Amino acid sequence: MEFAIPVIVVALLFWWFTRKPKRKGPSPVPANVNRLLGNQVRYYRQLDKKEQTRFASEVKLFLEQVTIEGVGIEVEDLDKVLIAASAVIPIFYFPGWRYRNLTNVIVYPDTFDEQYQFEGDRRHIMGMVGSGALNGQMLLSRSALRAGFADNGGKSNTAIHEFVHLVDKSDGSVDGFPESLLRNSYSLPWLKVMHEEIRRIETGQSDINPYAAMNQAEFLAVVAEYFFERPDLMEAHHPELFHLLTEMFNQPARSDSAAAPRSAASNG
Image 1 (tube, rainbow, N blue to C red):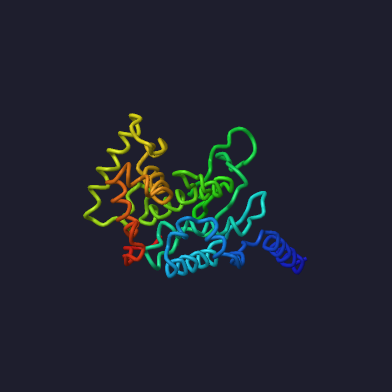
Image 2 (spheres, rainbow, N blue to C red):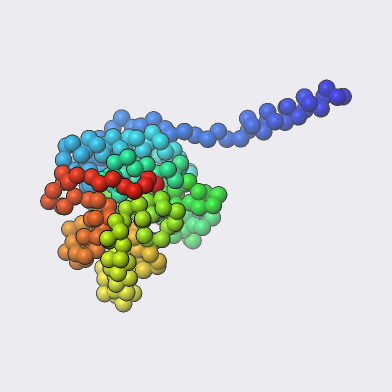
């Protein structure tokens, strides 16, 4: 009997560890990354050849480091490349930046609810950065992901929105004030413009998505979508905001794509 007890314990432990689902690693990088970027990502098309090569390399590196999984769907190469492009765009001019606060991106077929269900009539979430038990995870709606890169996508891009939240979070808090990107001399101007624009949104005097008025973190993420999707429109309608975001994300002047990149204070 003394021998039987250890055998039973070992058997139970073996059963427990073998029944637990194995964590998936990153899937193979698609062979058609460059073609998909050229067909689907306007930001990539506007880069010169040298920068396109670097952008594609960053996309591939992201896909080698982050696991992308589907819930109820098979994640396609297009989804992987669009997610990686969304990650690279905000930090492209900060060479060496890595999303150290992200391990997995979970893709839902469509919008989902607070219980992460994608069926029913209470679905309204297009994307979110996980916290608590979901720390290190990002959840995205595939329909919203693809809509953000459509030619008629307008000023919105859900995936870029969520990755900007991660950039914001890299200093320890999601507060609309990304210390790792914002030079000290721009801190007060950023707060001033942010509060002025929020007041305009609240009084119906702005073309910025009203969701930006919810709080400072959402303001940053929403205007970043606008900035990367329609820089021409933002420059025309919000020149001061456009200038501050150009500095924050270290983007070259729109007529000069060869501006030298700046080093970031820290990585996400």
